[in-house]
Length: 580
Image (cartoon, rainbow, N blue to C red; front, side, top):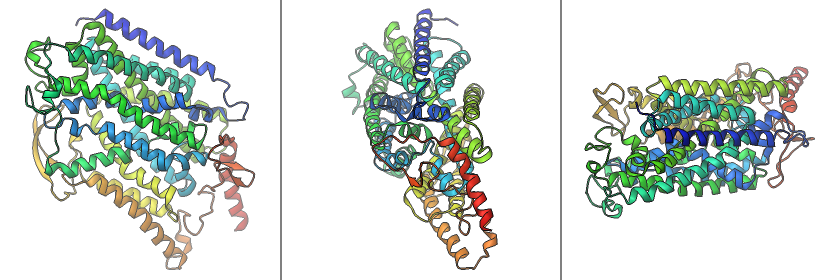
């Protein structure tokens, strides 16, 4: 194995820069929030709620523009039979941010929540919040593992270093500065990383475009030169699959803690909306070089390159088209700049997901479900431990699990079909309760799992209308296998069924208990008869100013939350005991 010294030096310099910025951000903001009485744990989670437009816009954009985003966009533009028509991530995620900014950012920020799971525990109780934590955690961990795995493969292509070593070093750096500075370190390093992505990819594009082996991409967009046109098209029989996948990106991209962590860190509700719109624009801008690199890959005569006569698609390396173009169509010093861009993209997403998972666990599981009396110092230490644990778990999965992408596909689908309809219900639908939430959870889970997941070799037990079978080569074993393809938009239908189920079963439970058709003693979830029990958090729990709920949309909301939240369960529980 040949080690490229220049590449290693370039990566070392970049990683050192990121580490220094992360530590500097932690030191600069170590006393943030103390003057306002904000807990240290809350400062780590939401940055003291004083993230401005510049840093906030960059960190929200960088969270979406990760390794999967830039690599995946280039891959789909390059793949014959797919092309630009199937590269849905740029527009899907951009619209996701627009929808999130228009409808979700304002109510979440104005009510002063700290994590995405807060409104669920407020309305449905701590046990239901724990259930909803499962798909949210799976999504964050599997996403981190998938992009770390992609980083290792990318580095091995260009620099020719050991995949495992590159994954471990990258993960350790991201974990360390996240551990030290929390959201501040993540946000400030995101600014540096986004600049690296933008400059690194744009430097590479002109060199690749002018390479002698590359045909005019305006010609190959509509004409078959070396492969089918990279513009792509959507066949009539695949229309519903395209719509299903687009809805998954647009709506399923909203209920993620990495998004709401930025929303809730904004200095006001209005700023939270503006950050979403800025990030939507940033996602589109950052996708342009990836689209061009994918088009370049589709327009290249690989016989004239150092890559060899067999194209990447025929070697089944289409997912690596971006680093392959950087290595074989650009000068070495340019490809190393591009490599830094890919590394930056991966780290900017990995650190955010790790922090998001630890924030939800420390607050919604450890503090609110098990240790309501936990001190702020204790919560901080729980966060630090879980940052290390979740980061280590994602790294381990990236190293030893061959199906990490399949796990992430499935978990992201579960976020869409389970959490999104529940978020809609808890914010915009009056009258839903824990019984409806449980029913919606089960509906979404069964209908989605029932559709199967070919990547995980998970066979379906629900065959939706229009299903068919195809022969495909398994991505790990290399053996041909027959898989079931669901042409029906079953993911979106599962989401809608979950939403309707929540509404219907909530009102059914309310009617049965309040009419006396079912005895009050069977209200074991305390969701209807005892809807003000200690299990359900009062609406004034999360933002309290005397007896009034602070809903100011323009002024920062900086309550001291650990004490009021911890005491809320005890106060409500004792009150019910006295009433009985």
